[in-house]
Structures are given as structure tokens and as C-alpha cells.
Image 1 (cartoon, rainbow, N blue to C red):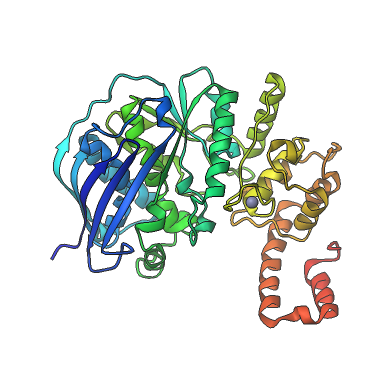
Image 2 (cartoon, helix red, strand yellow; image 1 turned 180 degrees about the horizontal axis):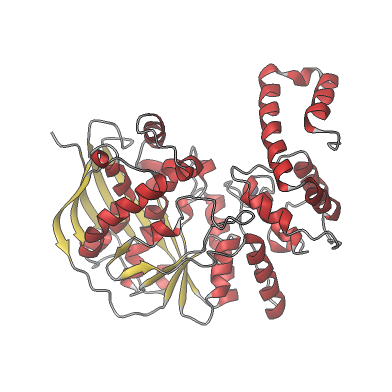
Length: 451
Ligand SMILES: [Zn+2]
């Protein structure tokens, strides 16, 4: 018998689309056999947007794109009531691109999508030029200031973010309040309209830990992209595209996202993940597609320089949001906060002015010097350290930046990894009960420079 996941019902209530899904695979791929999923569009009154009256093949785009990746591995057939013709024709290319980045996938894993009707949708007359995806981070802000002068809608989809928060409802109230404040403020600065999209996809649809485990251990995926962000990354663009019905209704043909690519030394692109342009380039539906990503070959340190220069030239103030925790304010301790704080310090800016209200120079220096700034891929550490100038006196954390420069990215990266292992062992054997030996061990293992 065919293993199917079926979208059995689609309904709308103006700003919300609801779906009823059935998992008939017998594999427990969805959290429950019957799942209620929804997508909600916020601030729609500014656009006169309503999901009511949109073609069914447009309404099902978010859930179809989110469910699609599971068909690649378990021989699952996805049954949808209707599908956009262009998307339907692109399915083999989408599979090939994901196989290239995350795989290679074996041919026999290939599932299929069955639609009762295939519909050729024509995008309505355009009211705007672009959707710009806006998370509030350096890449997104750069994409925003780089596309001024066009008629843009900034779109934030907070429900996609934070692999570290997967055990928790990411669209928590604190996070949502912060995100909507951020996008409102940046829309005022950049003269763009804005929309926020939330959904319960990550919370309620897949049994993510089971699938992640299977992909790793049964399907034996071990590509760089898979090791970087795994099943979470494979679903990333599908979740971002829960904004698709809005783009269609507004007649917006072009979607822009900031690139997250970062070079290291003379290698141009090393950090493979779910935001890879080879993936966004291949997804097309109903006359809508992604434009080339913003800043694809630009280093993150350079983007921060451009943002600071633009703000200074135009007398504007921008908040940057990097934190992956569900807090009303940024923690200044997670790796995304720390990465962004170092970028800000390297362009001689004061972090508090950029929205890091909890920043404390002494505490932050302590964290970095004790190798608490951890990255899976050393490319960001390389970029930060390479952007520090020996002859510059930095107004904030000057000693720390010069210490980092002297340490070098290879040594810093190596020590961070070593310290991570040591800390884990210390926790296991509860060595904190013997402070003298801890001190001796730390100074021996981490080198004398550790004070
Ligand atoms: Zn943080």
C-alpha cells in the first residue's frame, strides 16, 4: 500500500489559512496521524490582503513546500488537492538541487507528489517590485538598504528561526514582539511596507527528531550542508515561503533574501546550508521566483561597514537582531549575538546603539577570552579577525580585538573546540568541587595567555 501524507482540507479566515493533514505512512513522520496546521499573516490591513478568494493551488503552496522534502526519503507520496503548474514542473529540479547540496540522495528514495488538479496560475498585476525577507540580522539589513528606491515589502517569518530553539515554541510572545518592533522600525527607516507571517509548522507538523535521526543514521547523509543544519535546513526555504500566497495576491514577482555565504581566506564559499542560492534559485511558482541573493560574494564584515556608513550618511539609526533566544532583548551571549557584536565592534560602533542593550564591555571580553564564542565553521571567525586592523585604536573592546588579532583565527577556533570538550568533562566529573586543580588544568590546557 502506498505511504501517503495527504492535505485533506484547506480553509481560510481572511488573514489565516488552515490545513488538515493526514499521515497514512504508518511511519510516524508527522507528530500525530491527523495534524491541524495554519499560516497567519499580520499587518494585512495595510495591503487590503485577504486569503479568501485566492486559488486553492496558491493557498496550498506553504504546506506543500513545507511537506515536500519528506517525500524524498521514505518513498512517501504527498497527496495535495491542487498544485501550481510551474511548481509541479520544477519538482525534479528542486529534488536535484537538494540532492546536490544535502545529498547525494539515492534515486530509489525519490517519492512523488500527486495532485487532483494542476493549475496554471497567472500572477495578478504587480503592485510592488520585491519581497525582501527581513530577519533583522546583518544580511537582511544589508539587503534592505541595498534595494532602496524600489517598491518593497519587508517580510519577516519568525517561525522559521533558531535551530537552537527547536525544543521550544519559537514564536513565543517575546520574540514576536521584538521581531514586529524591529520590522516596523526598519520599514520606517527604509520607506518600505512590512508584513509578518507566523505558522505552527515547526511546532506541530513533523516528528523532527525522528526524521533527523533517520537521515543521519538510516539514510546516512553526511554532506557539509547536512552536518551544518540537517533536517532543519532542508525545510528552511519551504517554511520561509509560507509567505507565498501574500506575494501572489499582491502580484510581487521577485523575492530577495540576503546571502549568508561567507568566504574563508581565498575560498569564496564555505558555509553550505538551507539558505544556499542553488536552492532558492530553483524554486519557482505562479510567476514568482527568487532574485539573485543580496551580497552573495560580500563578506559579513564588509556588509556591517556598509550599513554603518549608510546610517552615518543618512543620519539614521538601525537595530540589528541576531539573537536566537526567545527573549525581549538580545542575550549578548549566544554565538549569533557574539558574532554580530564583534562585527559591530570592528567598525568602531557601540553595540548598545545597535540594539544590544545588555552589552557589557567587560563581560563580553571575558566571554571571548575564555573561548565562549563558538562557531561550527571557522569562516566567521576568520572574517572578524581579518577585519581587525593592527594600527587602529578601537573605541570599544580595543584590547580584546587586538588580543584576538594576535591569537589568529586558526588558534582561536582550535582552542574553542578544545575548551568545549574540557568543559563537558568538567561537568561530567564535577571537578568544580576542586577549584585549585581546575585552575591548574585550565591554564595548562588553554595556554598561558588565559588569565
Ligand atoms: Zn543571543
